[in-house]
Image 1 (spheres, one colour):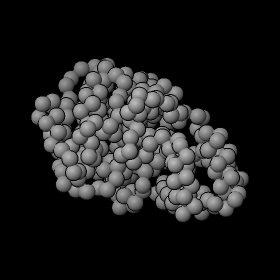
Image 2 (cartoon, one colour; image 1 turned 45 degrees about the vertical axis):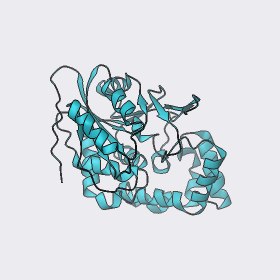
Image 3 (cartoon, helix red, strand yellow; image 1 turned 180 degrees about the vertical axis):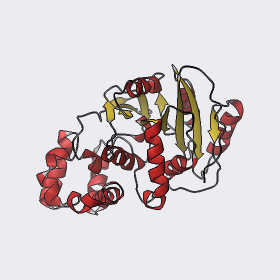
Length: 302
């Protein structure tokens, strides 16, 4: 059911941007993230927050933000979603985007650079793309930083085998987001079985023929800590965990579920090792990832 929300969008020539923020046990970081979103330059910003059932005061703190700034709205609380994907599907389903030019996703613990939405809006409004995402700059509590590059050239089939990058970089032209919303509403039960909302949405948009730009300019600080549901995945422990998931069938299982939703006629091909081997040049954007997937398929570990 669509939840009525007063967004408080003011008039003006700037783009109106709606940011959908999913939160869970995020009291430690939520202030810094919301402030960085509201500090965006060159655009009008409103934030809608959905808080998964938490053990801290994340919901109460978001209510305090809403009470002090009309640009912040908090959705009804009390449901346990059990993961970011279901929380975002709830946001997509329940939020009215009327009057907005673009819609963006946000996590609770990152820090946005001030021109993040403006740069995305410029690329969308000039016709370069329908959906925008970008590289990010990961950062750790000890001050270390590292570029997470997702902007390698897109491949014909990469959307079936990976996301465009962290969903918190995604910015959608409003008309495209409305199509995504209709899709999610019509297939809500199936969508809730998908582990990674950003992968499904990338697959849906690419398969629907929308132009997706992955920018090589990092416009967000991507916080790394023990509570990350998905982080950089760039160390030995992460690789071992991912290999275990692949061997247990999780990866091809997600490929199958996503393909069933966006291209059911291709499911049997996309999940066959022989198909992946013969099309390995098209299945992932980064060369190293293509080689790893090829090796997994050839050795039967996939």
